[in-house]
Structures are given as C-alpha cells and as structure tokens.
Amino acid sequence: MTYVDGFVLAVPKAKKAAYLEMAQKAWPLFKEFGAIRHVECWGDDVPAGKVTDFAGAVKAKDDEVVVFAWVEYPSKEVRDAANRKMAQDSTMAAMEMPFDGARMIFGGFTPIHDASA
Image 1 (spheres, rainbow, N blue to C red):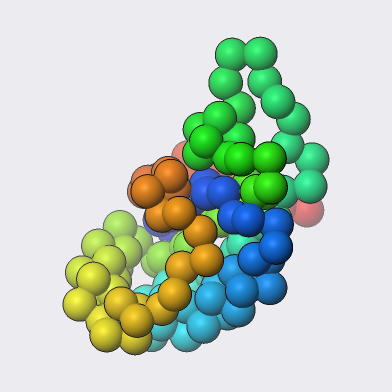
Image 2 (image 1 turned 180 degrees about the vertical axis):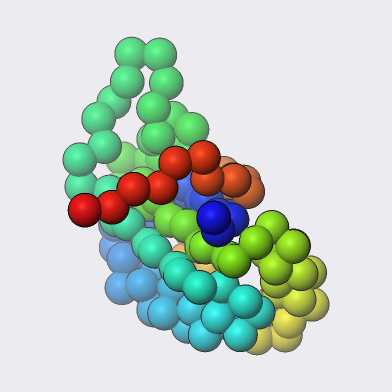
C-alpha cells in the first residue's frame, strides 16, 4: 500500500481560483519528489458538528471554505525524502499560499484499507 499525507485547511471563498492555481503549480514538484497522486477537495457539504467538526478543527471563518486534500507516495520513506526536499526547494518556498497556514492541520497516514469499485 501507499503512504498518505493528509491536509485540512480553511481557504477564503474569494481565493478559490488562487488556491487551485497554487495546487496545480505544486503538483509537478510533488511528482518530481516522488508523489504518485495529489487530490484537492473544496468543501461543499461540511456540516457543523455538536462536539467537533472540520471547520472547528481549522477555525474556519464565515467567509472560508474547508479544503480536504491528500498526497500519496509509494512509501513512507519516499514521503519523508520528499518532505526534506520540499523544505529546501526554492520554488516551493516562493509559492504564495492563499490561506493561513497556521490553521492547517496535517499528518502522515498508513492506509489500513483501500477499496474501489
């Protein structure tokens, strides 16, 4: 199975196009560093919870949308090496982030079930 880096963040509604452009520019770098898949999902049915929810996790404001994204790698080792390369990459460093990165949550995950139709 692959290894997955997952992300949840809040993006201002007015910056959807800028966010998509940033994601599209990031993909070639992710791919160069070993990623095999990159998915960005713009929230359109993200309900408020009674105890916790996605919006609360990233402290989304009324004018923001929750984004759920992931990058897949062939292994944790490839992902770890990619993250080291990205941290030193000048193109990645120069990329303008159209969201508050301090409120982004992220982590690495080992899949335990993977099914498709």
